[in-house]
Image 1: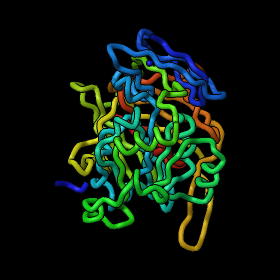
Image 2 (image 1 turned 180 degrees about the vertical axis):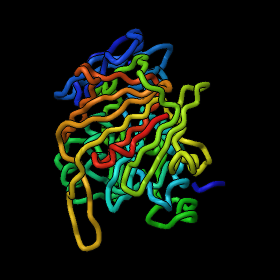
Image 3 (image 1 turned 60 degrees about the horizontal axis):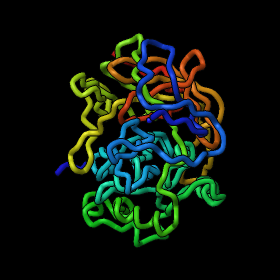
Amino acid sequence: MKRFVAILIVACLLTVSCCACAKQNADTPGGDVTTGTPTTTTSPSQNGKLFNVLTGDYSLNEADGNHPVGIMVPNDGITRGNQSGIDKADFILESETEGSIPRLLAVFGNAASVPDKFGPIRSARSPFVRMARGIDAIYCHAGGSGTALQTLKTGVLNHFDALADSKTFWRDPELKSVMDTVHSVATSGQKLAERIKKANIANTATKQPFAFGTVVGKQSAQKVQLKTTASQTVSFIYDAATKTYGKNLGALDNCKPHLSLEDKQIKVTNVVVLYAEKYVEFKTAKNTLYDFRTGSGKGYMISGGTVRPIKFTLKDDGFTLLEEDGSPAKFAVGKTYMCLADQTLADKFSVS
């Protein structure tokens, strides 16, 4: 084995909706979303299935709810290819955390969508806490940076610390054998569902973070390449048959699929690339931790084999994503991979 949304409108912190870049289909479930206090909603169902606020389809069992669950995942050299269940995530954010090393936030439509084993799980970092707040995902982590933990202690987000909960999380022998003890913390959908119920956290989504619809960009994007950090290059290759992008590690001319521990490649419908100003959040003699400054930035939305420019506003409690004309952005129905990178790396982005 190798080592590795009835239209629903609610108030939320991520603004993403209609597009003015090209032709679109407004019949796809979705809704305008604006910044503000989260609104608890009752999500519609179709044929016994609940709406997945991350993917825009009705794919979740009603009994399991549709409150997203986000889990921190390491993404360094030792773990890429050894991330169990990573291909099952509905939304993934990749961003630099320290020393040119990126980390991932893997988000699932609900706890039941998390595989029977998911890991390794690593510590909380500020960019990912921000994204979890924007989506209102139940945030799972194993410890964290001082700043991230301080934010979590204010109660802005439901979260579980794996280092303080041996019933929901465990040290997995297989992960330990292919990596080490530090990279062996795991969990499961069943255990997370039990913990969420015990904590009396509602299993209904409180936000609709994305709106969905078909949008065609003006430029072809069959292949995508970018740097997520100064030393980390990733690429995506479009499959017209499945209308998905396969994520790869490395540049296009010498890349390999980003596989899970179970040898399954990460495949998504949308690739979102955002560029913001990175800064040093905390520095010691041993390491330097990074975050991104709040404010406006530019990026790209890639789906359906095309790309279009977008812009965004980064806040402490989430993102606002817009089309170039200022109208809210739209996502194609399906999974999304988002990259938040330093603005100095914007010239390394290319499509063909």
